[in-house]
Amino acid sequence: MSAKKRPKYLDLVHIKLPVPGVVSILHRISGAFLFLLIPAFLFALQTSLASAEGFGAIKRAMGLWPVKLIAIGVLWAFLHHFFAGIRYLAIDLHYGVDLAAARASARVVLAASLALTLILGVALW
Image (cartoon, rainbow, N blue to C red):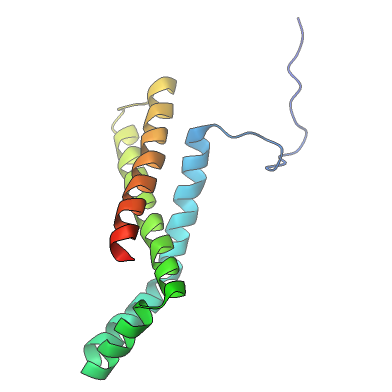
């Protein structure tokens, strides 16, 4: 009987996470990213609603390619967080709890968020 060698410390660079683990970490990162961007979104909304000049300034800023890249990143964060949240709600309701279903749903979350980001990113550009 041979014992499995387990790491003595959690070195995340060397530990290979399964797909559901990656989705879980990305869900937390995307949620924190979206939360931290709330002041920027509120500032842009306030500026665009204050006057026609403010709206024009935000519109011009959204036309710049670095801002478009950031917007595509925010779009991915929103879509990933949304689809992963639906996945976690299903798991809380005891749907897709077994290993095969959990791995499949994690792959669907990654594929759906990336595909929709690509489609909407092309429309945004």
